[in-house]
Image (tube, rainbow, N blue to C red; front, side, top):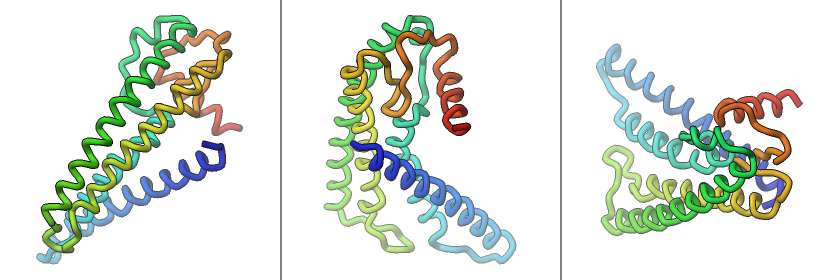
Length: 192
């Protein structure tokens, strides 16, 4: 994928994720206000908030994979040299791509099963499979990011890639843990 597509996708994901969280928070606040102060309730607010929670949780998978913001257990990774870090990233990205592609397959099957049941949300009567369709899409985006990271690590002999966006020269020894390194690189990116 070229840089324009990656940047456009990233901006779109940021927009969707940010506004979904804002709308979800506003709906829940209004819902609480309506129930406790007005003694009336918005019948749809919890449905929409649940759908937005699913959207944020799963649509954000690819974004988190690209930005290196998933939960990591990096104690061994932090202790080894860059050469081994590159090897770790090749293995991690390959295994992650296989796992997320399998989960994508399972999620598609699940969405198709839900569609065949014809279930709809109680208040808005939205078919539930439409809401759940974001799950395989999010895992697909995540799979693509892990494949990109795997390919970049195989092709580039001078750098290792933590993600498809975060590359580190092999000749520069990393002396901090993974989480702090990603934070530091993000800060440097923002300053530029």
